[in-house]
Amino acid sequence: MSTDFQSARVALGARLRELRAEAGVNGKDFAARLGWQRSKVSRLENGKQTATEADTDAWATAAGVPEEAADLRSRLKGLESQQRSWRRQLAAGHRPVQDRYVVEYQRTATMRGYEATVIPGLFQTPDYARHLIEANTTLMQSPRDIEAAVAARMRRQEVLYEPGKLFRVLVWEAALHVLVCPRHVMTGQLDRLVGLIGMSTVELGIVPLGAPLPLTPKHGFWIFDEERVIVETVNTELSYDSADDVALYGRVWDGLNTAAACGAQAHRLIARARHLIAPA
Picture 1 (tube, rainbow, N blue to C red):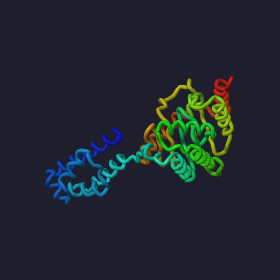
Picture 2: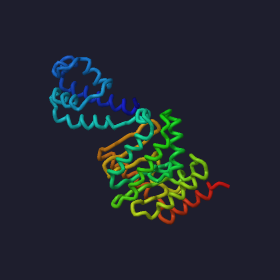
Picture 3: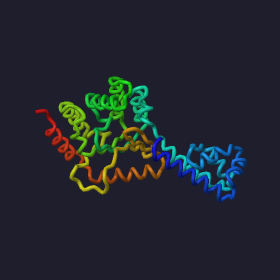
Picture 4: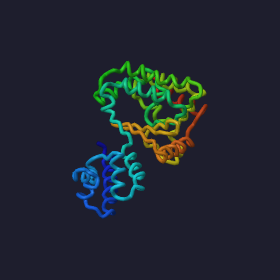
C-alpha cells in the first residue's frame, strides 16, 4: 500500500474522529448508535480500515451532521485515487493492459499528453515498443507475451487515423536522445515522429532542453477528454477525475506548451537528434 494512500486514509480517519468528538459521543456509544462493532469505529478513526461511501454517510448521520456526508465522500474519492499496481495489472502479461488502452483510446475524442523520458506509445514503432516492453517485462518479472503486447500497442495507434480525434502531445527533447534501444531502432523511431508532423489528428510539440520553462517537467501524464488524468509511475498507474486535478494538470500542460517547438522547429530538433544518434 502506498504511503500517499495510507496518509490520506489516516487523514480521513482523523476527520471522522473529529466529527464524533464534536458530537460529544465516545467510541463505544457511537458504535452502538451505528450498530457496528466498537473495533470498526476504532479502525476507521485510526486509518487501519478503508471506509465505504455507506460508512461515511452513516457516520455523518450518526454524528448529527448529515450535511458533512458530501465532504466525507469527496475525501474518500480522493483516497481512492484509482491506484492500479503494475504488478497486479501485468500478472497475466502486457497484452491485457495494451488491449485495455486500445478501448480507452477509442473512446477518447481529444487528448493532451506529456512525456519526459520516452516516446509515447501512441507514436512508437514496433521495434521501439518491443525493446521497451521487453525491458519492462524483465523489470516487473511478468509473463513474456512481448509480441502480442507489441501488436496490441500498434492497434492503439489506429485512432490516429480516425476523423474528428485530436491528440495534442508534448515530448521533452531529452526523450529523443535516450537510447532505450539500438541506434538504428531509435533513428527509425525518430523518422516516425517526423511523419506525424502535419497530420490532422496530431499536434506534436517538442519542449527544447534550453527553453525557459514556467515550471519543471516532473513526470508524464495524459488528460482524456478533459475529464480524467492518467499518471504512470514505476510501480503504479494513477487515475484522477476530480475537476481540480484535471484543471491542475491542464495548467501544467499549458505551461509546457508555451515553450514547445512545433512544425518546422520540431522537425529540426528531431533531425538534430537523429544526426547525433545515427549509427556510424
